[in-house]
Image (cartoon, rainbow, N blue to C red; front, side, top):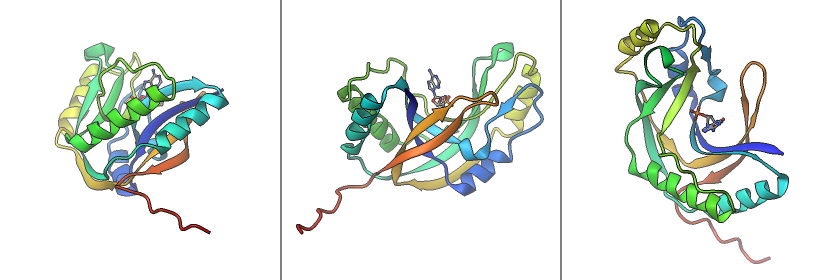
Length: 188
Ligand code: 2AM
């Protein structure tokens, strides 16, 4: 079995900008900068055959390249229940278009349709029970105007997620190009 998800990588300048936000929250587990990403579709554990079907379906996705920018910080779960701190994205219809194409590709590959609404974000930290809500609020106020990019997005990635004691690590298995038609290979 292999644990998979589809996402977008962040360029180095954006990783640097995001990593400058880290620290100063007791009980928070910060995502290491090399792991920052935007999830387009979480897949979960599948066997090797399904992974191949997924790869073939993703290979058939045709969608334009686009530009993304990070804009603002937010959290999933409010107050003492707050669990995840994230950076948001400036609205970009081409991102939603790509996500919808990836979703239909996953259904074509045999996966059950995703029922949760797409909520684009880059996770920065998972917060512990002991992380004081007031400190999270202060950090979000301090960096409320956080922005990074814009940056070009010209491929999406199939990632393997390896669960570990210190959190997950992600390995890019394959990139799929965006932006129009691929050249026809010349006949030999
Ligand atoms: P995230 O996008 O909020 O960070 C790999 O686990 C990635 O898939 C993570 O980025 C994770 O959350 C996202 N993801 C979405 N749904 C998930 C789920 N049910 N279980 C684990 N990860 C999930």
